[in-house]
Image (cartoon, rainbow, N blue to C red):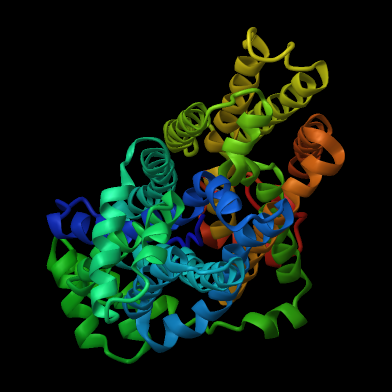
Length: 505
Ligand code: BGC
C-alpha cells in the first residue's frame, strides 16, 4: 500500500469551517494514484495463465514476471525521496502517471518474456513512486480536519483498483470478442508500417493478456490530466522558500483566512526540524529501534501471504478444483470485493477500539483461514468433478483470510508505520519501511509457485498459517498502542528509551 505520512502538528486545533469542494476534488484526483497502484497489483493474477500459455514458459519465469514489478517498486520508493524534493510532490505524481501509461503500453506490446520482465520493472518504478508520494501529497494538502479521511480514501482506492483489475481481467478472459478489434488494430498499425506484419500483429492483439495489461494506460492518462489541474503541495513550496505561493494554495483549500495562515505557520514550524535521516540512524539507538519496528511490521504484512492471493488467486482456485477460467476469475473477483468491503471494518474501528485489539483479531482470523486452507488440501478435494464441497470450503477459507487481512494488517500496518518515527527521521523511516514492504512483497511473489510445486499446496498454506500465528507474538512483544496518542508524545517516549511496546499508551 502506501507511505502514509500524517500531519506533523497534531496539537493544532481542528478546523470547524466548511470543507470546500475543491479539497475533495484534489483528494479524489490524487487518490487515483492508489487506484492505479491497485490496478497494477491486481491485473497480473488474471493475466498469468494467458501469458504462460502464449510464451510457453514455466512457473519460475511466471514468478519473475510477477515480481519484476515489485523490484521496480523498491527502486521507485528509493528514488521517491529525491524526486519529490527536486520536482515537487505534484511533479513526481505527474512523472509517475506518465511512467504508468508508457509502462502499461510496453507491457501490452511485449514480444518476449524478457521484454515483459523489463517493462514490468519499469512500470514498478511508477508504482513505488506513487506508493510513497501520493499519500505524502494528500497528507500535505488536506486541511487537518479531513486528513485522516483523505488518506483512508487513498487506501480504499488501492483495494478498489485491485478488484477493478480482477473484473477487467474477467471481462477480457471470458467475455470480450477480441478478434474484430485485433483485426482492425493490426490493419491500422500495418498500414502505418507500410503494409507489413498484419498477420503477426493480429495474433498479438487477439491475446487477452495484452488487453488486460494495456488498458491500464487509460486511467493513467486520465490521472495525468487530472493532476495538471491540481496545485503543488504547500509544504513543499515552503520547503523551497516559496511562502507566498504556499499561502495562495492554502487560501484556495482552507475554509477561512485564519485557517490558511495557521496551516502556514504550522508548516513553517515543523520544517524547523531538520530531516537527519541516515545520520540519526547512525547516532541514535532509539531511532534504530523505531526502524526495526517499521521494517518488522512491513515484513509481517507481506508474510501474512496476502499477495500470494492477490497475484495467484486463479491458480489457487484451479488447485482447489475450479476447472474453468470463468470460475477461477469470478472466485478472484469475489475475493477482491471482500477485500474492499472488509477495509471498512478497519476504517470504522481503528480509532475506536485501537490498533492492537484489531490486529490480534485480524491475525487470528488470517491464521485460521490459511490453516484451514492447508488442511483442506491435505484432506483432499473429494474425488474430482462431482462433489465440490471441499472446493467451496477452500474458497470460504480464502475469504476468511482476506477479511482478517483487510480489517487489520492491510490498513493498520501503514498507519503504525506513519506514527512511530520521530519527525527528524520520518522521511528516512518511511522510505526504509516502504522499501521493505516492496522487497518482502517481491520475495513472496517470486517464491509462491516454487513452494506450491515443491512443498505442495497443503504445506504451503499451513506454513503461512503458522507464520500468522507467530506474528501475534511480535505484536505482544514489541508493538505499541498508538490510538489517540499525539505524535509528539510517541516521539518523546521513544527517544527517552522506553520499550517499544510502551511508546504509545
Ligand atoms: C499491501 C499490498 C496488498 C494490498 C491488498 C496493502 O496493504 O501493502 O501489498 O496488495 O494491501 O489490499
